[in-house]
Length: 151
Image (tube, rainbow, N blue to C red; front, side, top):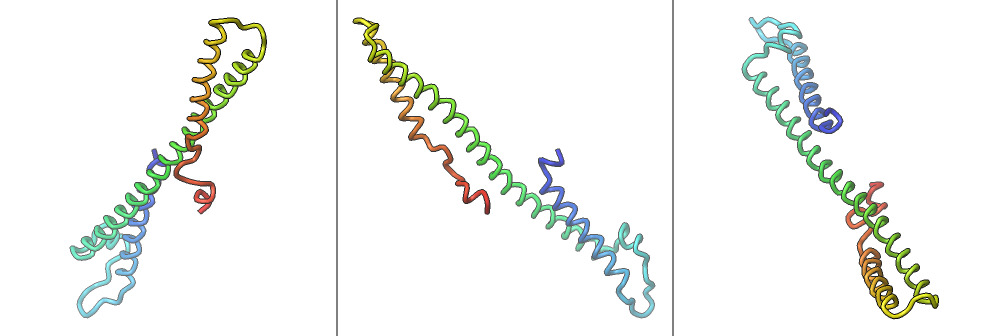
């Protein structure tokens, strides 16, 4: 699960890091007049109202960025999966269709077929040619080219 939503977890960790950095900055800031300096742990876990709101905004913003990154990468993963499936489809269709075409042509060149058999083999060859033409026209990698994957 963590691997699938790693971008969202990254956003949450970024928000928590900003929370800790803000708490550290508040403990290191000099206090004016009668205010006393709070410890890091108190500032981290029990912030005052304005600091709590600011830190919650940090956390929300970082989570939102992680979610946007996850959505973007999710689309990219879906496109790559589709391209992989298209390549498998292409390989599974074009190899048998080409083999059927070759075998039908070899049968037609031989003298062993007569009458109805010749017509049947010609029809099979025609259908195999249609499948082969479709598979050759079908884009192997439609959306991402190898050059785009490296970027």
